[in-house]
Amino acid sequence: LSDGPLKGRHILVTSGPTHEPIDPVRYIANRSSGAQGTALAEALRDLGARVSFITGPASVPPPAGVTVTRVETAREMQAAVQAALPADAAIFAAAVADWRVENAASKKMKKDGSGALPTLAFAENPDILAQVSQMTSGRPALVVGFAAETHDVQRHATEKRARKGCDWIVANDVSPETGIMGGSENAVTVIDDKGAEQWDRMSKADTARRLAARIAAALGAS
Ligand code: C5P
Image 1 (tube, rainbow, N blue to C red):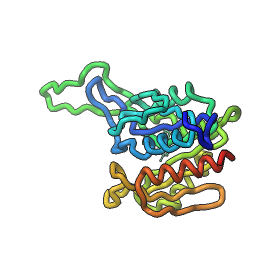
Image 2: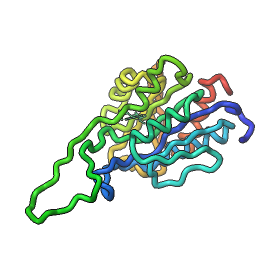
Image 3: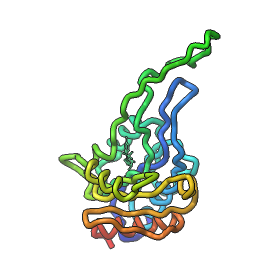
C-alpha cells in the first residue's frame, strides 16, 4: 500500500454490471463496462486506501493492488458487500440489475417445435446501496451512489439521494449520444447535502482522481 491521505482506511467499491440468469446459458445484463468503478478503485488505491473491489462481469480488468471479489448476480454482490464490511466508505459504482428472472430454468430452455414462447417472470433484486445507506449500526461514514440517467439528470439524482439515504450521488447522463456508457470520458454532477456540483467533461481517470480526492477530504484524510 502506498503512503497517502487514505492510508489505513478501508474503502469498498462495487463495479460493473450484474448478470441475471434465464437458464444455465442465457442471462440478462446491461451495458456497464466497469470502467468508472475500476478507475475509482485505482485512484483510491493510489491515495493509500485498502480497497475491497466487488465486481460483476465487467469488460475491463480489475485493478492490481486491491482485493477483488468477482460476482455474477445482484444477490451475490449483496453477499460480497456484507462480507467486506465494515468499511470507512462504500462507493456503489456497479450497474446492478433491478430485476432478476424469478423462474430461471435449471436446464437449458428448448424450442419444442410448437411455436410456444417462454414467459419470464421477474422479481426485484435487493437494493444494496439503500441497505448499506440505511444501516443502523456500523454504517460506513461515507456512502456514495451513482445514478445513470438519460434525462432530467439532476432532478432524478437528487430524488434518488433522498430515497436511498446515501450521502452523495454521482450522476451522469448515459444517453447514447453522450458516448459515456462504455466510453473513456465522463461528465458528472455530484449531489450532496449542500446541493449539486457540475463537473466538466473529462476522462474517467480524471473523474476518478477528483472523486477520490473529494472522498479523502470528506473522511478528513487530506
Ligand atoms: O436505482 P438505481 O439503480 O438507478 O440506483 C443506482 C445506484 O444504486 C448505484 O449506485 C447502484 O450501484 C446502486 N444499486 C444497488 N443495488 C441495486 C440497484 C442499484 O446497489 N439493486
